[in-house]
Length: 195
Ligand code: GLN
Image 1 (cartoon, rainbow, N blue to C red):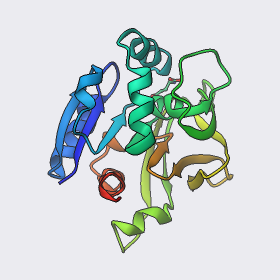
Image 2: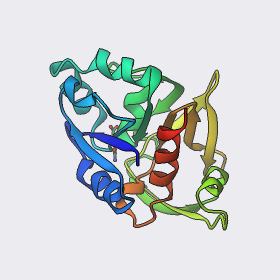
Image 3: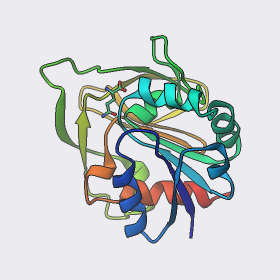
């Protein structure tokens, strides 16, 4: 079974831990560099990307997280996706591990939060039936563009990108940990295990 850590500096880390436990993964809250040892993968939760970044700097986690991401799976949800990105068009600490550019709070004040069914072909790997994925967006970022080896996994009906993958790195604008649909967690566990 995969050993998956969840960055527990701020935000919705407990919900990720619960989803991972439902799937039988070994989990650990990560607050210090030493907590990364022995993990197969790491989830960076939603919350507030500026706060997560500042705390990661304060706890000397930036370089250890970058090193971990060179050889291990990392999945960022919402604020976590922003933190993983190469560019968020603002001055804030970023890991810059994934070749994606994001736009924070891209949906404006009137549609701060919404839910929508998405077609996510990448989930067929863990669910051959391929039923639609019900995604929850909360003050979500958009993935403005993907570059290099990064590829699009899901888009809104108007074509705006909301999930991307680059090798073992995964970014979703939405919050799979707030649903009982664990297919994204399953997909990530597969990514963390594969060599
Ligand atoms: N708006 C937050 C940010 O820019 C992200 C919101 C979330 O993670 N639900 O960091």
